[in-house]
Image 1 (cartoon, rainbow, N blue to C red):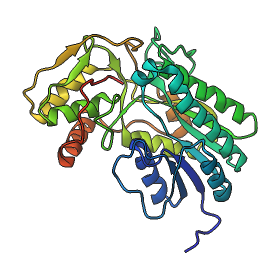
Image 2 (image 1 turned 135 degrees about the vertical axis):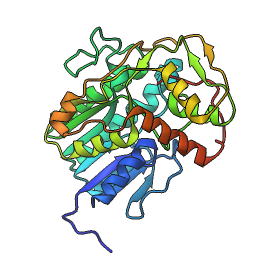
Image 3 (image 1 turned 180 degrees about the horizontal axis):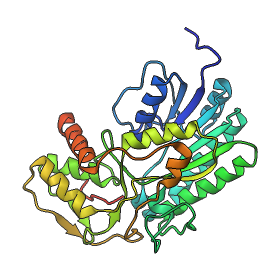
Image 4 (image 1 turned 45 degrees about the horizontal axis):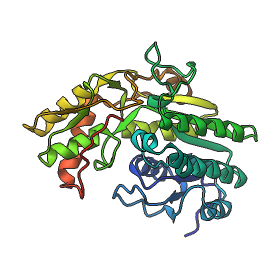
Length: 324
């Protein structure tokens, strides 16, 4: 059956991944016509709703550009990412080539296809660096300490050039997103990696003293904020977090208790470029989007641990842990 033309149309790049599937499910339930563009480099193993069109391609590819021209979306949600802080640290040039070029090409294609609104995933934990005042607000001057944070800030800068063409743009500066469907075998996502290791009988790994803090925000809350951003008339950066600091050591200890593990914590040397403390002032999100985080940390950790336990052993186990 052909969709009626009045149905809102959205392209979700990275829509088959961890955050993307949560966002797509909400959009589909709300009646949006959806085109997911995903290169399948980070699938989460959850099938997309049957009403969703899927293109297996990079967001900045010629195939994606042609598909957007045919689809004629009203909005773009850009959630695609390749690697995190550690990969960008090892190979900043390669990270820019793989990530920034794809993102910039995607923004241009969306604008050319007639998008009136573009919402992207940025990083509140990385673009602010180590601010003296926490929780960090959007009024602070960005000062990223890592190549990953610098790349995210570059995406925001390129997005601002698209805004000059009359497109409403918003960069959602996520905190440390965690929850079901996150990859527990990669280099980023301390909650998912720790849960995976504990459930496989391995000791969790913490880099540094474990007292570094992050703003951990549950993925379903993040998905709600992302969908709300599509309905906003505002433009600019918006923090998506809880406003609270939680140490990596507290996260690991909480997961140890939830899983009943008797494994001790393995401490390793701190990593270069890591932010020491992070928390995000989400008052702008409340004003602009009518959003605030709803999930208590202990509840989110319990749901995440239950998800990994129900899923069973992972195909591979990351031994490096991570705090991002």
